[in-house]
Amino acid sequence: MTDFDYFCEMLRTHNRIVFFGGAGVSTESDIPDFRGTDGLYTKKTNLPWTPEEMLSHHFYVEHPVEFFTLYKEREGIMLKAKPNRAHYALVELEKQGKLSAIVTQNIDGLHQKAGSRNVFELHGSILRNICQICGHIVGMEEFISLSNPIPYCPFCHKGILKPDVVLYEEALNTAVIDGAVDAIRRADMLIVGGTSLVVYPAAGFIRYFRGDASVIINKDVTPQDDFCDLVFRNSIGAILEEGVKRISQ
Ligand SMILES: [Zn+2]
Image (cartoon, protein in one colour):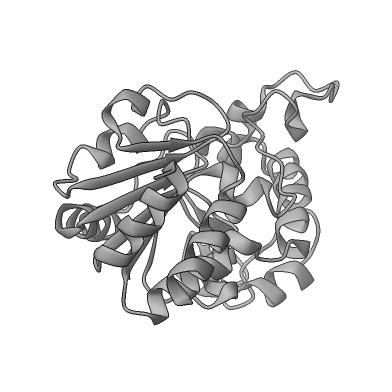
């Protein structure tokens, strides 16, 4: 039995699968990982700040013009992106009653765009923006139409909107954490895709897994490889799409 046969067998015999995804899922939709070596922000920008600093809470407060200039550039790339084979395979698994939840570190909303329902977005979503004074929520289309580069609240006209994404220095949303941990704890199979599991909080979350089938699909080696039943270095979309096709035959 090949590793791929074994993977398909796992998919067939498990019904509470959780998919834990990182940046690698989105790079297959041509959204660059800014942490990666060929990432967008490692290119020379001539700015005195690192991308991590520019996407931090204090930077949003102190340098809103530069923050939104960078944020909107990144957001534009995400809005143009389309769900890929990985997203659609997960939709199919959920429809078949096999997948109980997706836990993602991505903020691009592509799982929902593809049609997935139970998605825990650990780092929030670019699709929502919140006024920092009155709490008014602004959707994506309206947000884009607001004055450049600093988007003021269209309701109170005083507050600056903040994307509902977790910036550096900010805490994760506790309700989202609780939901994600609960889903992982109750999962019988865990598929980790597109994350090296070294950056907080990914490594911490998978500790809660108590099931008997674990799979990592990632281009690079991860510290968890030795503890998993299967490791694939292939494209996440290719493995998931083929796997779903096989069990649906
Ligand atoms: Zn407001």
